[in-house]
Length: 178
Image (cartoon, rainbow, N blue to C red; front, side, top):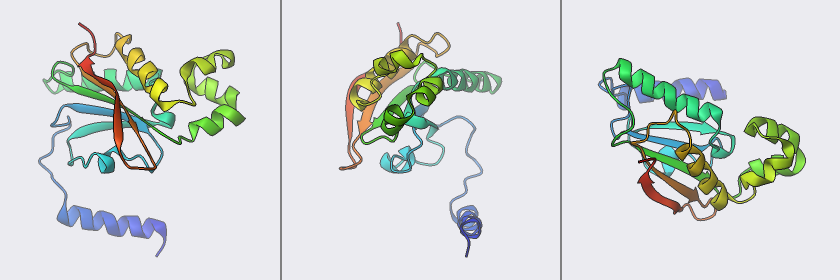
């Protein structure tokens, strides 16, 4: 069986056993998790998320950039069209992790990483790419400064340790802005 055939088989099992047609477009726990594309750090698995519980946005390094802010802004627009508001009472989690592959890009292709992060190469060090604990603080601060992200979110910054499977809260939950 090819990989694509196994995907089709697993989807058929999902449709028969776990599909929930009553789920709504917006996450029922009013949560958004920003994380890395690294397959070791799947928020659905590490937090045991229920289907439809949270919106999960993943990119390289789980870093907050212009596209992440735009995605949250679009989510807010989609919610408004559905007669809901995103922000007040919602939770926003920035999830970084140890042993991130972005470190290799920092060492071996800094120009590419700087372009991705939308900063000049000479300022890349300011983003603490090599330190997920500092990086998560920087990204929470970036969200707090992003006017397109509704102020009513409660935001927290966590780091997942790929060696232990545990998360550590680096930036405790707080209101995004007053």
